[in-house]
Amino acid sequence: MKSVHVYKLDGSIDGSIELPEVFSAPYRPDVIHKAFIHTQSRLYQPKGRDPLAGMRVSAESRGTGLGIARMARIKGEGTRRAGQAGGVAGVVKGRLTHPPRAEKVIVKRLNKKEKRFALYSAMAATIDKSIVKSRGHRLDDDSIELPIVVDDSIESIRKAKDLLNLLNVLKLSSDLERAKASIKKRSGKARMRGRRQYIAKSVLIVVREDKGIGKAAGSIPGVEVARVDRLSVIHLAPGSHPGRLCVWSKSAIEYLRSIKLPASIRMLKVSSQ
Image (cartoon, rainbow, N blue to C red; front, side, top):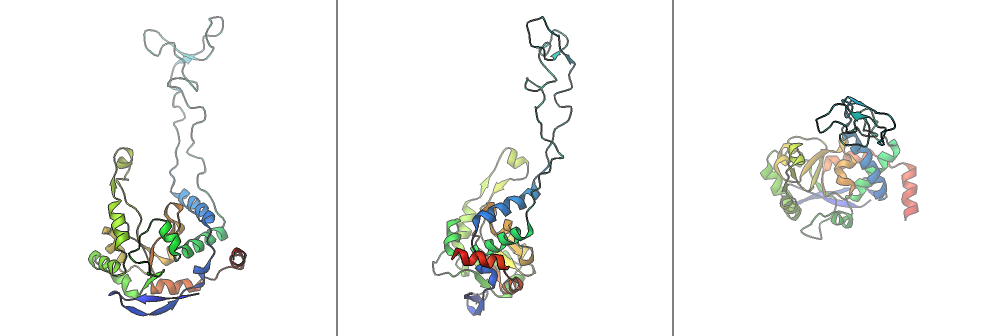
């Protein structure tokens, strides 16, 4: 694997580091998309219907010989509902034919090896500049090498001002401005259900331990922080689109050295070449 520079907080180069084997995994957007859908299914909310919805009516069929359909009709007279069909499916104010049931299993399961393969492929996509740009991220300078690795002092940043200065030094200001300009206030159902605004995804900072940087990134639009031992396809490929612009701490890169690509993934890599 290739070696990349390690930057200090002031932007100066503090040596280099060799990338782990996991960044050489083959790029498989189809597997990433499948893993994203299956992982996101854990966030789905069960939805059902009242078993008596559309059935709380005093309806009875009038039988045959009247020249009308034999479906159940509302009893009584002198009201709008009197004589209308009720208590059956496919009529005004009637029940649904096949209503959704809260006990339906909506969580999708995925094979462990396939899930890991998707995670490794999503990691490898973060160092391909063409994939990162195709996702919509903007880089100030085409000479920026990916991945961007910073020494472990990044994990101890506690102020948003200091983190913003670091991202500007790393020439990521264009992507931060893109995320800030994307903020859109929502109304209607989305606002009522807690999704008050839309913000595009910007830089993902991957650390070994969160020593305060998570709080510092909370007020910068689009910037997120994730621990390397809790990374998922949700972080690396939001919306199932791989190529997230990432900034890694040196300890996070060292942690990935413990991951050895299985022989099956290595064979896929050779066959793709």
